Image (cartoon, rainbow, N blue to C red):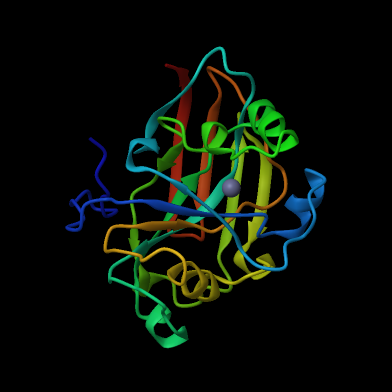
Length: 221
Ligand code: ZN
């Protein structure tokens, strides 16, 4: 079973819990999928069974249509948070990681068009590959973190947390008013523009700031 780890390989004490994901948190990405820019954070959840290690290899489902990459900054929570205010939210972060919000795009479009929940397209097994985490102390400014994703040497996504419609601390605050956050839970903070298809045999590199870099390949389940 997947476990969160620090960049030096140590296990992170609190066991992983849920991933709360934020949709359409970069205006350019909302526009590329012809979605309106949201007035409040759009939240959905991936369960523990979605989480896998990003390093060396990820596996995507076959026979379910296109699998898209959404490269996102992940935030690891260290404290129980309910109805948090700004100060509590600021003190709740243990570390930062790199995450993929893998999406079955055709299925998601179909579910959306019928006004159905999109869990099957977003929360399937293995849909949340995660890097190792870096301590929050090494990210002094959460409003200036680069995130970049390349496939086979070509940059597909390149953004910065400064472009988020709702910044990280506000996302934690808002989330905690709907879902109590527990130690080991993570937030996926939305993806910049440039999402696209991942195929079997692709090699990708994802970086978050200068602190995190992961190279991995795509295989089929
Ligand atoms: Zn996403």
